[in-house]
Amino acid sequence: MKRKILAAALACALLAGCGPVRTEPTDSESAPADEPEIAYAPLDDRPDNEERVVYLADSLGYELLLPEKDDYRTRLDGQPRNENGTAYGDRADLYEWVLAREAAGCDRYILSVDQLLSGGLVSSRSLTGENPVTLSDGRTLTESELLAELLETLAADPDNQVWLLDTVMRLAATAGYGGFGLNEYNALRAYGMAPRPHLEGDALTVDNIVADYPLGSDGQVLAVESEEPLPEGAAADYLAARERKLRLSDALFDALEGTEGRFHVLVGIDDSSEEDSIQKNEIAYLRSLLRPGDALLSGVDDLAFKAVARLYLDECGWQGAKVSVTYFGGTEDQPACAYDYQPLTAIVAEHFAFFGLEAAEAGAEELRVLVLTQPADETQKSGYIQDLIRALNGEDTPTVLIDAGNGTYGTAFHQALTEQAELGGLLSYAGFLDMAIVTGTALSHGVARYAFLQRGEAAEATERAFLRTLADSVLKDFCYKNVVRGDILAFVQGELGGSGDNFWTPDIDREAVLARLETGMDAAAADVIANLERSNFRSALGEDGLLGWGGVALENYRFPWDRAFEIGMDIRLGAFTDPHAEILGIYYR
Image (cartoon, rainbow, N blue to C red; front, side, top):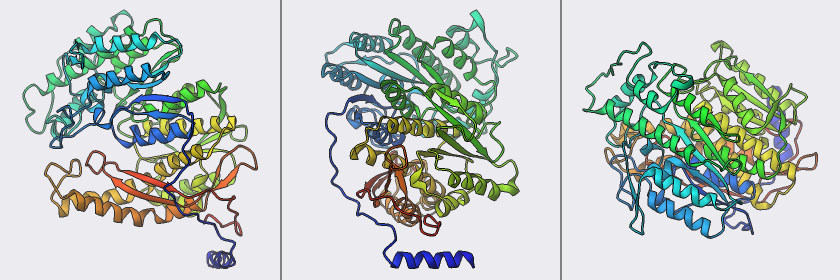
């Protein structure tokens, strides 16, 4: 009854003209002028490595320079090849593109080593041996020579600041690429998870790590167990790809001698396990090579976010911040999903160190992080959700929100947030991918935004970009991952007879899939968009720093890799408004 009375009061207020003002989303936006440039060679062309990095950079006042898309695009099996005739990026074009940016005077770089040397993340997991690169001038360089020459050129300019993104190869290569199937993936991932001999001290060398790849912790040769026969040489190729990847990472650090302070290496641990897996010695070895300013952290698809954020923090004279973390759900002391090798608390602590954050008690913080974990007690799911929402609504402290529930709450958490919270008032949100990636994504966006607000340099372009970063993360997680994606998978598999992992094998009616996506997102996103349009956001710190969101419209939906896992979309925004006011305390409800 109380809810009906409040709803009626709200309706009367709206009819009286006291409701939210919605501005019409527009295509025309003021173009920023004289922004500092960052030359960016992305890991691949997925949204987290492309448009979302553009949003983050724009929100901090940078202009992100990207190569031609075909030069960093990944193609799965059966899909059209790139212009270079391969399924991966064009390493020669990328090398020459970076040199062209240097010649043009750029002095900020974020460069994926996997892209520069392997043509992207997926191909870095499958290439073996030497794969020389022939440049447009006819010279042919080995991968190590290419890397050394590129870094030597960039190091010659003392003004350059360079972030190099590298990865620890995940436990198995990518199904659906290079003829690698799901059976191979499952068998080789289990093989990679098996404990290996533990190396340390002087024994921790690349040669010893590689020699121990085929061995179990007892020193005996491990067998690869598979439900179906593996293609001949599959295990040998897997180990050869690991060896190539590790040796190239070793060559990277060798080539960086004398560049401390200007060149930074950020290594991401990809798809891991809490077991003493084949990655353990690799991780230990790479950690031993880190220099001041380098880092090795869980998560790969958030590497560019972390690099952009740290570049900005370093340039703005960031002095750190006091941040509280509150967990709801009771399982923060264990890995949040099967692809993490550390408890959630350890992953958060490592990222705190990377961003210069100081852990603080609630009430003594500048920022706070609220995290929903998987439920320790299945019967208390609703209670965990409501406890978090009460905490979120109970204070006005700038807030980073992380959904680390890994799908265990279904749509209940997102529905409750949409009905009871002000989504557009968050500094950042993440929940779509594995929990290591989610942590880095949320913290990089939230900390960078807070530092930007401290400097007080907001402009229309930075604020619109910030709103896009938040809207993109919320809408894709709330609406696509947990609602529409399931329908897309059922439609592709049940009605079209295709595969959700690749719309080309078999070749299906991709226009029909896109139409299904548009219809599904129109319905699923309506309430979330309404919440955002009623929200206020922080455009400056302090009581007078709020502005109201304008209208939000989604268009140009796409499947970047022609698979159901992720989507891209354009976000149009209306003009900001004066701050929206609460009505009887239930405005956002």
